[in-house]
Image (cartoon, rainbow, N blue to C red; front, side, top):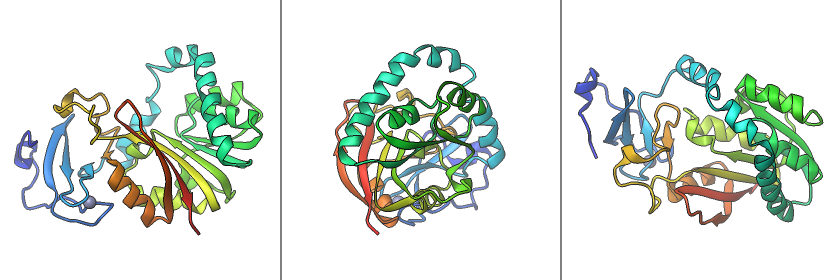
Amino acid sequence: MPESPPDALGQDSQISPSACQICGNDAPAIFASKNGYQLYQCQDCHLVYVDPMPSADELAALYNNAYDDTTAGYFAKSEKILRRSRRRLARIRRKVAGGRFLDIGCNGGFTVEAAREHGFEAFGIELDAVSLAYAQDHFPANNYFHGRIEDYPVKNLFDVVYCSEVIEHVADVNGFLSAITRQMKRGAILYLTTPDISHWRTPKNINQWDAFCPPAHCLYFNPSNMTRLLHRHGLRVLRRIWPWKPGIKLYARRAD
Ligand SMILES: [Zn+2]
């Protein structure tokens, strides 16, 4: 669904877009443009991606302010969020006997705390300092790191990695998944969620979809290309949960 040719954005038509990070196809179609960013769709695996990707500085500016408007409202619902996290952890706990749990993008620490309550040694990583301070103040029995998984300084060999609504924000998805699998034991479980651009409830007019928000979301997956991507990193999808909302929710296992 082209909205405008690249020339309309002032780009040089001689510069070809980057290849797909999942399948390597280097002839994507123009998909849309929004917020001054151009998006392409891979003609092979159908990944939709921002290109060129936002710079590290643009992303840093985005995440310094990410929760400014929502912090008060979000944390006011803390009891509700904690209850939801506990229900999710109860389901994960049925699949994993225990051990070490890592939440990538742990926000206010609710899921990390729920993991601790379920008997895990619990760790959380978060880019946003305000959210991380909330986690440290309210749930101090856990371990926290301010930064990205790619910069995580220790190798902890986790039994469970929890990554909910984060992967769509990542510019280098292969670097991100390599960093995750380096932290997983053999046989460890990855719980992953992300918006699903192919879901039957995703609006036909993509601009009406609340998850279509470049550059914050710079990658838009479907279940098939996500499975292919995980497979490249030695992760086998064990189970997909069919969500009512346009999202992918799955459990994967690190093969070896
Ligand atoms: Zn592709």
